[in-house]
Image 1: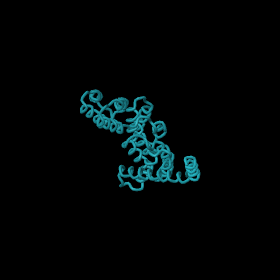
Image 2 (image 1 turned 45 degrees about the horizontal axis):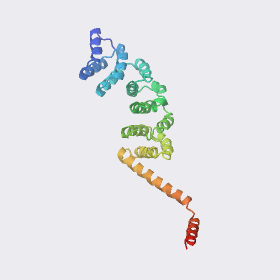
Image 3 (image 1 turned 135 degrees about the vertical axis):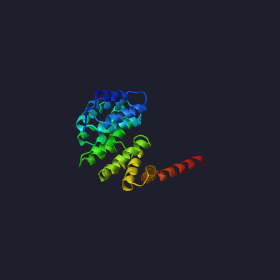
Image 4 (image 1 turned 180 degrees about the horizontal axis):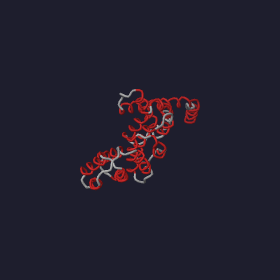
Length: 247
């Protein structure tokens, strides 16, 4: 329940969020979550967008989850349109922790494909938490457009999101497994492997998928070679003609 604290205590905590010492900011965030006050929500959201320390941002998120969703959701959704990547990323992270599906319409395809990897990863995690029942296949199709993107951590985050969707992700993964891009194919195969065998490590799954893709490419190249053989008779004829001309 949200309560109203004495002004001096509230003021002290809000000032603590601006302190140069990260430990002071952490204690302030924890205090604001321990005894919630709706008057702090705007400040907490704003601080999320600028806080450099991960553990403090996590405390800020926790503090926001302690406030009514009816108050926090509109402010967090507004942050998703911010030009600051950290603001978008942290708002998405907080929405995933609150878990209120009323935020679902705000998770646009633009956020799922955000140019900033951390924002995109936060969007993927939030999406699989907030997706309404029945919309999982459409979400999987949107997520599959990002297969092959970024480095190991980004790809692992995407795979985890798709695995969370379960069988709803299979059609999108199988479509991506025959894509023109070899990186996309390997990532799709590795993700489906993780879906079928959660105990398989991501590194093992991706290396196995790359081998499958490489062998498939070699096989395809071999088939193409058989389909378009050189004109052996023409080559022999040219050699015979050169031999007669040189004799």
